[in-house]
Image 1: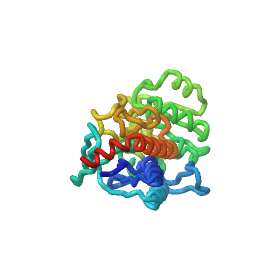
Image 2 (image 1 turned 135 degrees about the horizontal axis):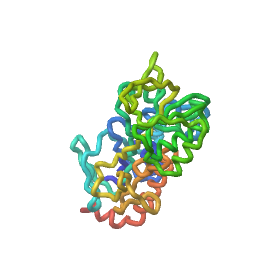
Image 3 (image 1 turned 135 degrees about the vertical axis):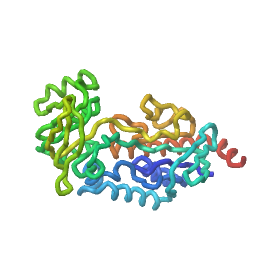
Image 4 (image 1 turned 120 degrees about the vertical axis):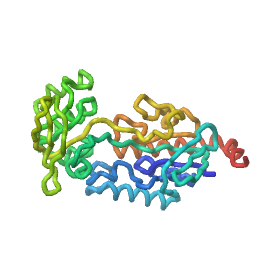
Length: 314
C-alpha cells in the first residue's frame, strides 16, 4: 500500500515528488518509459529560475529526478494502463500488469503539442521548430518567423513574438481565423504581423540540418516556399488524460478540472501541471502546481489518517 502515487515525471510530477518525500510520504512515481515531459524535446531552457546559464531540457529533468530520489522518492518506469478511482485504496495497473494501490494519487501526466505531421517536423523540433513562443521566442530576436495556426493560441503566440522578432507570418489553412475577434483585431493591427490565409503546410525545409523555411500550398494548389529563421506550431495541445476519462471531471478538451488548489472531484485524487493548465503551460508553473498538489495531499492524509489506517487493515 502506497501513501502516495504520482503519475507522471515532468516538472509537476518531479516537484510533487520532492515535496512529498521531504514530508515523509514516501512517494512512488510512475514515470513511464520516457519521463521528463515536453522539456525532453527542448534544447536551451533560459527561463527556469536558478540557472545562470541555459540548461538543456533533459538535463533539467534529470536534475529534478535526482533531487527527488535523494530525498526519498522512488521511480518506476512503466505506463498507466487502467485505473480504479471508485474508492480508496485507489488502484492503478501498469502496462506490465502490475497493480499499485495507493491512499492518494497525484496526476501529473502533462500534455503534448498537436503537431502538423508533415515531413521534416520531427527532425527539426527544438532546432528551428518550436511549440512555445514564450519558451523560445528570445532565440529569434530580430529574425523572421512563421506561426502556424488560426486559433487564439496561434494569435497569442504571434502577438508575443511580434514584440521580440523582426517579423511574424501567420500561416492558416482556412480563409478566416477561429480565434476571438479581439485577438484577431490586435494581430491585424500589429505592423510586423503578416498573413498567409487559405494556405497549408506541405513540408518543413532544411539545409545542413538547420531550418530553412516551409513549403506551402495555396488554395489554387500551387506550391511555393517561404523562408524563415523559426517556425512555431500553434495548433493546440492534447492533455494526457485518456486513462482517466469518465472517472474525473474534465472540460470539453480533456483537461482535468480542479478546485481549491489541486483537488479533483474525487477526494484523495489531485492533479497538477499541463494536464490541468490550458493557459500558461510553462515548466515553472507546472512545478508550482506540483508543489501545491503535494501540500494538498499531505493535508488530506493528515485529515484522513484514521480512514487510511482502516484501509490498510482491510
